[in-house]
Image (cartoon, rainbow, N blue to C red; front, top):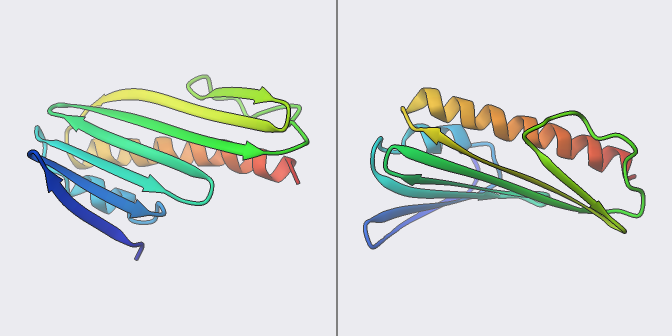
Length: 126
């Protein structure tokens, strides 16, 4: 199980995860219609999932330092890819209507797709 820390501030529950293994479990346990924030990080990327009541905003970010810019990045029209000398940045931002476990699964699937694109960039940069 990955390390998770939770605290509450001004009525907002914050959860910090080291890694993504328990992301579904943590998201599925969040209350519907309340304010909360889940931040998951690992060596390669950061995900922030913020509930503002019934709407959940998902922001994903990764930055890869590489001298070899990939010629072709896997197609995903929702992921913004920015290549500059020595670096590739990936970004994703979307809003979901939070409905509990179903939405948690959709968010985890999106994170996994993002990680797939990131993995292909990491593989080609070696």
